[in-house]
Length: 142
Image (cartoon, rainbow, N blue to C red; front, top):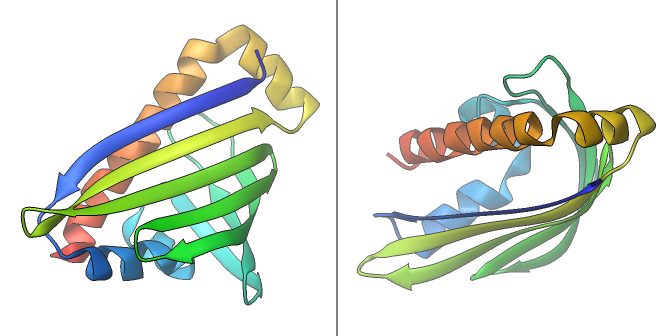
């Protein structure tokens, strides 16, 4: 009950290189992704990200870059969640097909209890966060 797998996919009418630049610039996420409330660089390949969606709790995550390629951005996640996040970017019809994949387990006892008791609410909360990403990314790309 502590593990989660999320997958989102959509198309944006912008070149892959442009989309990749925006997604790779994690420090600027709070400018366009409403549920990412703060970011701080720790090193050239890692940082702290603070997220808060609809439910009244805040996640603090340490992200470490694993892959940065034109078609894949992948990070490890540690902190309140532990696992991996991957963006796949495929060029199609002059735009980019985006695929967001997240495989995590909750990293704290309080979240483990919440996960056990309120799994549907946590999945809904994640869906709201990804809706914010989708809308914010579209605005950011223009």
